[in-house]
Image 1 (cartoon, rainbow, N blue to C red):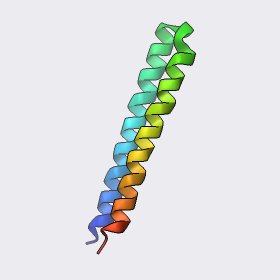
Image 2 (image 1 turned 45 degrees about the vertical axis):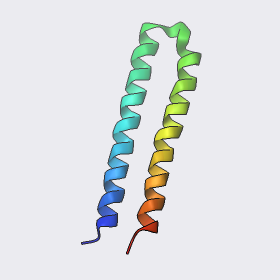
Image 3 (image 1 turned 90 degrees about the vertical axis):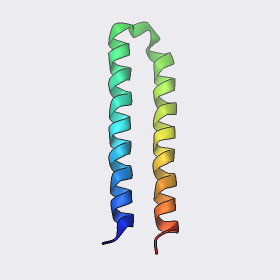
Amino acid sequence: MDLSALALGMATLGVSIGEGLLVSAYLNSTARQPELQSKLLTGVFLGVAFIEGTFFVTLGMTFLFRG
């Protein structure tokens, strides 16, 4: 069994869960205080960038260490 495919699948799952939680928290806080939407959106974009960055590092490591 190729474990690199499993590692990539787990990374994708983690990214999906992380982004879902982030967007859920953003929508929750925007519903509570709509006047802070622009400030919160900046944080959402930064969070998504870091989450996606972690995925791409995992993707690179998967292909790098694939035997």
